[in-house]
Image 1 (cartoon, helix red, strand yellow):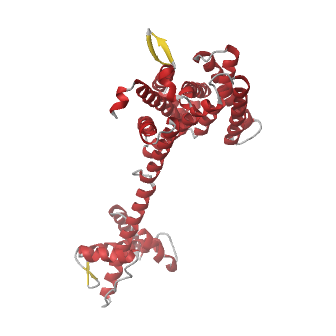
Image 2: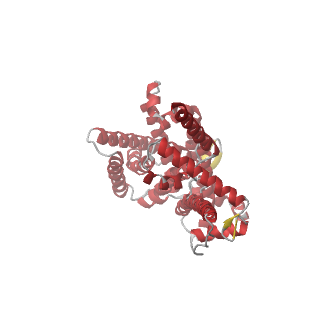
Image 3: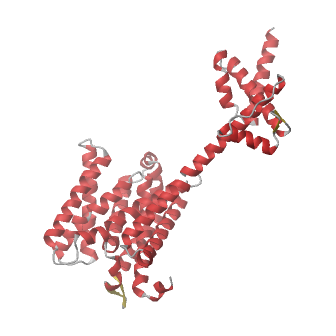
Length: 413
């Protein structure tokens, strides 16, 4: 770990990866909120012919001509996709897929035809040249620094500035486009501006990290943030953190662990982070949701066992233990260990829980029969399900309704 701070080349690689992750993950939040993450993929691939055409006309790999070509290609992609969606009545995803695959293929062909003598090849476009970041330098204010750091830093500053400047406007456009239009916001112009930012970010990151990582960083960190967060501000922060963590872990793993392609390893790490999020996210993760469902079912099984045991004890019989290798068996074991049930009869707190549950069941059955008019053979099953969800306030409300109904009956008689 200390070597990376002593080796300027490795430090430049790490810095470029972090800056690219920040730039892509911030602008990607807006696309994800609009359910248009595919647009980031489309732009990241669709600007390739713009990059090549910019080089062909100028013979230079400077940022300005290639940036202009990429922006024109991105706008062309968006306009054609919208035309196919509106006029040809194609699905928006299908329209984007048709346009960006066509443009990307055209870009690869142009690369093979016109750039054979330079290092702008298909592999460069796909995987980037982050390993050579330290050696591709430029002078800025008399200081020699890697060209990729300068271009990606400019893109990052533009993204941050636009995010702060149009925070409310883009937020309204993302969550309620109809409200945005009704308040007079230039929705189409704001969307075009976002499109240009995505194009700028893609162009700035292309040379260093390639299109594959650009697509991964635009789509995956915001998706992670969307799973973990419910607020726009925290979503932006978490997306940026997920991108930075992936950049650092992927870069260090590629250099020190597996000796592999750095952008590919970063994309793999961000995918690994997404997998962890899907599995372990506190509110929406697969495992926490499954655990909450399991413990809920276990609680229902305990309450049902107590209620059934109390009813049996009132009739003079004792409840026998259910099969050990079952949910009811596990619930029975918990009741025994906690002392809620002894010798098949509820005791102490277990008896109070059973009586409360039976009270809820009776209240709901009477309400369903008298208030809803359900037939007698339709009362038992709904009551068994609903009784576990009823809280004290609902019980009081049902009791009040029952008392009012009884008073009306007495008055009428």
